[in-house]
Image (cartoon, rainbow, N blue to C red; front, top):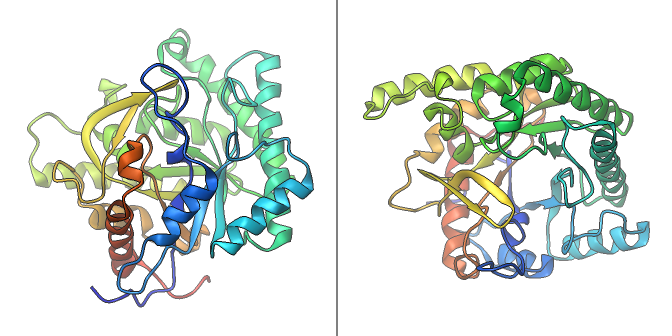
Length: 349
């Protein structure tokens, strides 16, 4: 395959697969350092094309979100030396990091908002440095699972929306946009319908939108954590799949301002403190259920008009041995090149 002719979207790799689900607990693998993740990303190359940037999780051990300006600038220097731009940043909104549940009490909400403030501060340093020129700040409800949310679904969605509105005001003051990650493990965001209801309840589309991930939104179709919102039944035909996919993306695409390329085998997976969610698979996994390029096209229609300038691969909870293989990253890069070749563009306007 020859290198894509389209300049956009820029092709990014995520740094958090070196962190999510990793740790020193029983059965856990150790985290992979930021510099090692950068080196693995830099080593990937397909037909002369390389990754052009990274998306970045703002928490230890990659980053202390409370680090001083000079330390953050040194991280920006490191990323730039490796040949990358920074795109979207993940705010440390979860309990155990800086934040806490967006549907929690006032103390929890303040922690959540403080995490967003920290992310905006670091974004500003990266922007001023020049290593970051586009991208959003990613958040979620920081409430694992849906059982607590179900105790009073309407009130809890209202509470999350109130927290998100306050977070969006903070982001707007810093010239940033927030993208809420659609994933079945986040309460109030665990189905396509609940996600849409939450976005509409926040009602700030210029500042707070949706972050779509191919692996996670596939489970939206199946209604994994919300059977009442399933758009597909077991044993569905290919025609039924694409009809359902179009129905889902037509609802969520207008809100989508950040996009993850991924593969999924229809299963769920969890590691460490991370609750079960869509199982990310290698791009070339024979058990993968998704036609990556075709699915991406549904999300990327009119993407430039929504301010999207890059796409990112997400391979959360891959084993370390898989992450250490150059072939893993080359297969990912090739899949992303195919997405850009089929659905990319050449202007930012």
